Image 1 (spheres, rainbow, N blue to C red):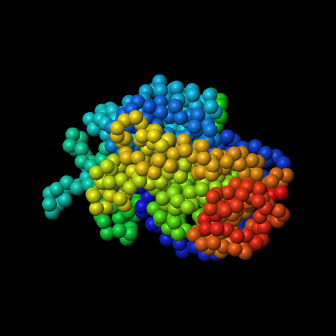
Image 2 (cartoon, rainbow, N blue to C red):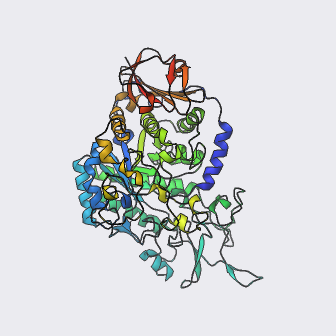
Image 3 (cartoon, rainbow, N blue to C red):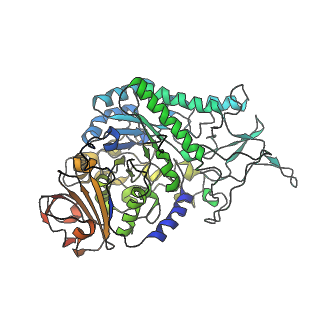
Length: 600
């Protein structure tokens, strides 16, 4: 749920300064050629799939997706090769931020279903060998949560459950003012006055999302109870939301919080990116809290058995901070601190259509070169907070991006609909639901809205894309559902979906699961990646990422590839056929053509 406009601006400056012609990079990340290194834990080779429940499948005709809808589509998930699916929040919530404002961490939002429905989901998914990952929201609750209501009343044990402060009286005006200049992600002050308690509370997201106080051991213990409760109900792990916000700097000896400095990136004083969030994000204590959660999950597995329970961390922070979440020599951290480099890299968060091959390689290298030894990479191209891949990178690159994501070493994480090539739908101000947009105004809301990527899943060419039988849906449905839908693409080849399923099968090969990696750009147009493992076929991905043809390209020298190759998989733009022979030292590629080649 993060808003990351400031971080994007900062990180892009560094990335653009670094862009240049990339040399070939050789990373034997997996030590795949050693005889003893022949296994992977389940998650290291998994195909993860994010479901935004509100938009996935409506089973009861109210225009809103639900748990029974997900259950009804588990066979689809199995068919497309999903190993585990993480669900955006399904907890009880007033829906101020569509589930990220939780009123009861131990129950299900009624419009999504019941605990019995959830238990059925776990059981039915298990029959299909699909694991369920829950979205865990540690930073805040809803202001309708009983914890907050007790804290407002200063009930014993809850007095300091949240971040409270008296604020200050302005000597000139006599008006009470917030404790600091801190800004929330959804515009405006991060402090809100509570009349009953006569204090300000901190909310780094919406007003109805008060921040929990992680310097209170009772809060730490409570949130561990939340994790254990859902582990007991059968989840395989957690995607942890907005983690960098969990801790804030301590006040000084006089109880004052420091003001954050101006960023210089915008003149809008209500915009979160107006400030550099050096006191409210990315503190070391947050990393150490994730270490505690990893210990809890490992202890649970040791006691109860079963497969490894995993942690996926959402963070758009700088890579030097993100990499800390992996852990160190003495302490284990998250298995998957999310790799958002294909989101925050390139030409910005909304338009990467002009990103050239050098930029692609720099993005790949930014993660693989900084990842600690012995860890596993992951690749996230999109999610419910971002414009869809086909809209950010261009519709001509939809297959190319799926091919790239599936081919790179490590974990692949797909947002629902990317396998179909779903694209954004522009949402009017009147139809907007996202608080990030609704807290602005009709002139600027499109800068902040996340609604376009949250439109309902396109199941078929039937009314409402087969998502719902209701006359209306909670967000409008993209009119392109008539041709872009699961039913049509499942019966058509080539299609985005048919290629996606072939890519999932290819990822099961030993070479892609355990092989070493070499990658390079060849000029501005071509990205080349070689995956290789002793005793197994070598695979090479070549992709022309621009809208101009190239010929006479020597990929072989760039990635040190020798021998003969034939086409294993390709996108329609390649204008070739599976089984065609390819000469890597003299390659021609049409605009946006992408090939996966197999050694012969």
